[in-house]
Image (cartoon, rainbow, N blue to C red; front, top):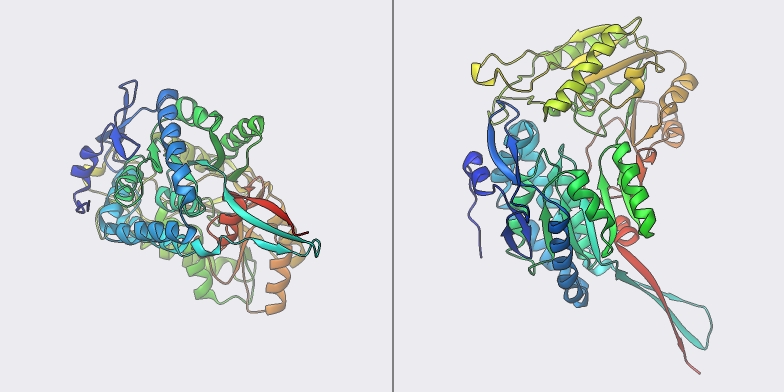
Length: 496
């Protein structure tokens, strides 16, 4: 069956209302309950989502467990071909998926959502091509024995994803798990359940029924029973540190492996010799201003050398001032909205905290939309705070919003120490023309993803994951598939 792309996101949202996808079919929540999904740009309800509970989890896991047995028997290359085919089919739906994710998350279509939908398809194609890499080893243990290892799937994998980049983060987890021979149950974020549900529907036109299941709901009622289910053998979670600790404890009770990606407060160090234009572009990209700063890798701690501080900040502010904030579905829009009322209140509270911080100067950027239709939307102007110390709360706590904390520096040893003075360790970058400085910084910065003179987002084949409280394990690479979604079994043949 081939699905025709639906380019009207409002119509598609209605079609997807009040559904899980279990066993290859749309089903209502066992309880019959739903919750509202709204458009962050206007506040209007555009759909409902199925309210997942323990009963729905039981159905989804049972479906996945049954499908996984036959899937695991299939040749790995054949599994890879089917997963890659999912990517090719999804590539036909990039525009549709981009529009729908813009509608439910408030991310601008042109600058954010369409790009994410394209990377989604690419991620499935990438992992599909790794089917032939599920290799074992031959071990010279004893001349009279043939000793080999094989990679085997873990079973049913729970993928719990956030709302900020739901398509990309789901794909990193699910594509690797599927190619490795596992079945998947995805629990979407309650703020963004629709586009992931549509992806599940599209993928089920290619995959055997029951292999890829999707539930919507809230953490206590849906996420917790999924993690605790005895037949779930692996959990891959992206979200807050607080929730990550809860997931980790629940998984520890079952003694099952977890992958956790838990956010960050990423430092960006700009040296005196940095290319100014390149660094300005790097701040814009690294801070994820077009995504309203709603990114775990956002370069939200900006360390600028005192000799270029004023010039760089002035140029960054001018660039952000030129960005258009407005309807996420409008092609003219650069910056969309904050996703939810709760997140908007959190961002505003940190802006107020910054205003109250001793020595801080507030630089408000861009402009609020003037369209009356957007008067109830969750818009907030990006803010740059200068005059801060690294010890200030606004520099230490993850805000997940368009709030950039700038710290002036003069001594290289001191700025490296300040950059590492954080509980987080997800990403970092340094901007310099001096290769010796760059090499030294990449060795010493405490982060799992370090870049020099660039701020790329997550890409297929680049190992991605943090240290310290930013998480456990890697994603988006061959190593992540092998280490996190398979077990290694040793086999010995006595040849005597």
